[in-house]
Image (cartoon, rainbow, N blue to C red; front, side, top):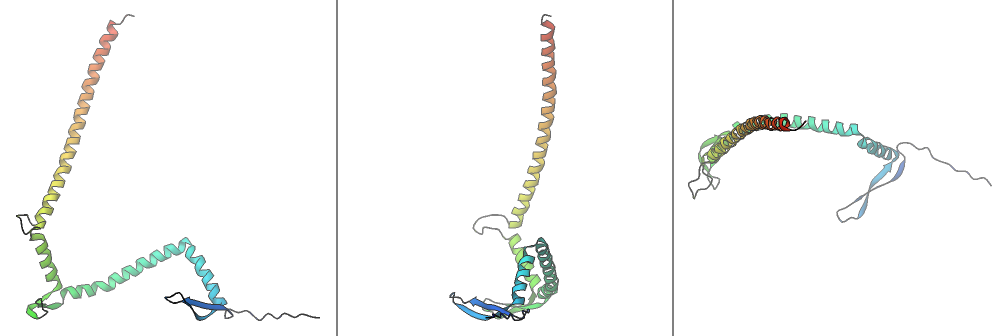
Length: 179
């Protein structure tokens, strides 16, 4: 009795399994066949993704992509800021002449900087509060530095004076000590 095993030729297109996906309920459904090429590609992908070079490459590609997007969007933003738009009232009806986004942004910024933060009290405009806080911080820094310098000078002078006094007392004590 002779047993003969025939192994068909295996190529990259040889089907080795079925691709199964799962729907939103978790039920499986077939999505085609997996070939040797699919399995080889999956193994290569897993090996490449684990390498540090891939991480660097991915970061560089992301950086280039972000740069290209910014460059492509700049003219669109510039155009949107400069293109005239019709002013409207709260119901969306045309009211007054046209304006630009730049003018609207500048008007809103001016409101933020010049309006007082609390309309019920006599508080100062936001920009005044910001400037006062910055001036106060700058003065505090300068005063702190000057105090530190003065403290160091006093400590140096005290150290010198104390050293001289200790030396005098020590010399006097040594002079009186029996030999």
